[in-house]
Image (tube, rainbow, N blue to C red; front, side, top):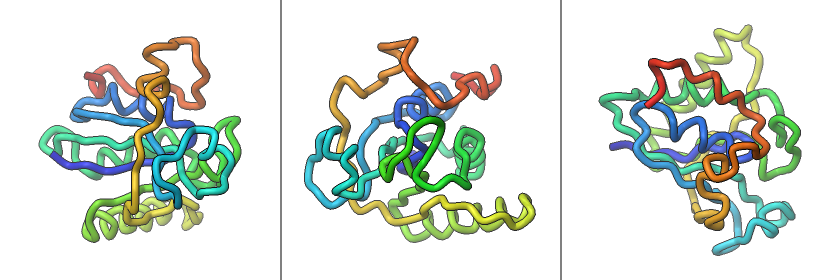
Length: 166
């Protein structure tokens, strides 16, 4: 099993997308890389503590490679928008890949370099950092779109093809 933390705007849609992807075994929505212990949603939204809304995910790298995982991540985000995804604006909605190992961070950086080359050297604003902390979001945020199917989501969940779904 491998694990990574991804920020891609509002965590509801990011979690809904990845929880349906073959090879992903666990998702938790939460707050990554901020400066306060156990923040509340209101504190995260204030921007005072520097958190990103993110998902922690575990995946079976025999089913889903790191390359494929990052390809899916870039499929659902706009990597050129700073602190914004969909209609959501603010520091907590930034894009980021938060890594558990130096090797994972180097791999993610190389992935982005190659992505930028493929896209006419257009620079992305996706953070690639070591994970310094992750706090689970409140329970009502966990699997939010499963509990609230009509809830807001900036991600087109139809981007997952039938053969990519669990």
